[in-house]
Length: 268
Image 1 (cartoon, rainbow, N blue to C red):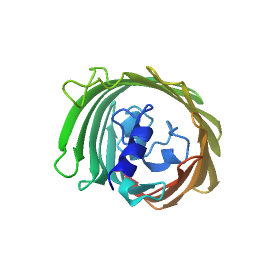
Image 2: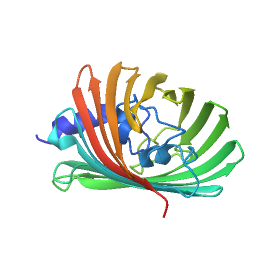
Image 3: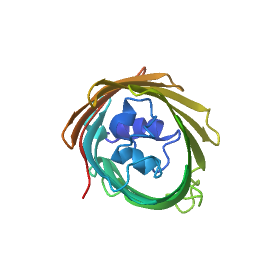
């Protein structure tokens, strides 16, 4: 019976617009939006052509706990690098426990920048395992991304599951979905971010966030997302090349989720 509670909650969580993503990092506190002009390593996994500076490497490792349930713990790692016109990103996560239910995701991407636009291809793999010898299943997904940058306005479109993947041979395919990501830099001290998610048989998902510099490179941020309405926030503390991030999100029915991560940005 221990598997029932986390599994039911997981199915509720994974129904809308998750695809084969590693949904972690500060985006939890920004309503699912991301920074297109100052991406973290996990941001690059979603938008491979976000504006990571040339020859900068990003790494991030973190821990997430949803709704104060140990069965919903997630550990993850992500890394990204840009050199000239090309960018690369790789990430992996494990959610849950093999004794009950676990989900492993591997996601990678290659992006190309040309002047004020960018293009990318994304590959993802998902493996699920049920405890007590109920079996395991896996599938692979292909996606594409594009970006447009004009002065203080930034736009990215990410389409996942182009190959109609399915975890179970005779089961339903995981639906094609599209995410539209935006950022407007209001000044040097803050940015406003947005996300619109579109998926077959799901309601339109809208999110809004804000990223605010309060002292040097130290940041606070907030976000909200609809269907249902959830609230989030967090802080980002920087010292030299290192960043500590803490995000929190509140779901009206399920409660509070937490993510803490340690990252670094450097030029190898």
